[in-house]
Image (cartoon, rainbow, N blue to C red; front, side, top):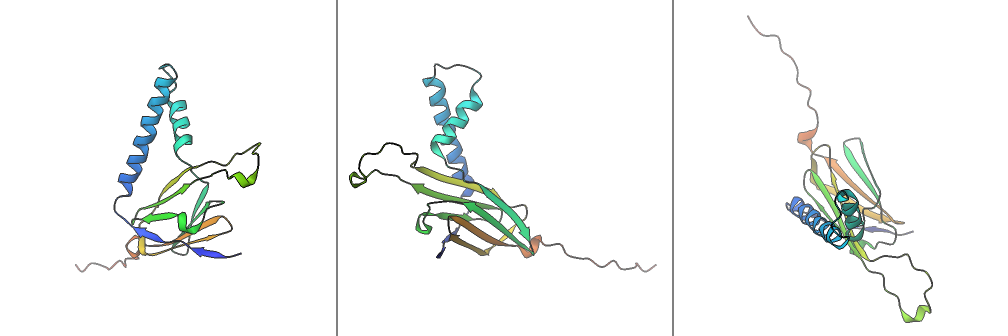
Length: 165
C-alpha cells in the first residue's frame, strides 16, 4: 500500500482554534438545551451531543521513545490532501473536513452510516518539541506523526564540583 506525506504547518494560533471550537460546541449545546424545553441538569448530555454533531475525535495513541514522540491516529477513509496538521512547541492540532454524498448511479440507498463533518483533534505534548523536526505520513488509514523532543527539554547532567574553602 502507498504511503502519503501530509503537510505540516507551524502556527501560533492553536489555542485560538481550540477555543473557537469549544465555543461552537457550547453554542450548539445551548441550542439543544433550548430545543429540548430548557430542562435543567442535562448540561453534560447536551455538551456531548453537540460535540458528536460537530466534531469527529478519532482514536489516537501518544508514545515517547529515543527522544521522539510518535502520535498514531486512526483516520480511515481520509486522504492526505484533506488533512491539516498544525504544530507549536507544545501542541498538535489535526483537522479535516469530510463530506459524504449520495450519487444517483449508486441506486437506491437502504442504509448509510457515513457522515459528513469535521475532524478536530488536539494533543498537548508532555515536553516541548522541535517544530522543525516533525513528520507526518498516512498509510492504510493510520496517520503517524513523529516529533523530536526539543533539545532544551532533554535532561542535562550537571557535574558537582567540590567547593574550595
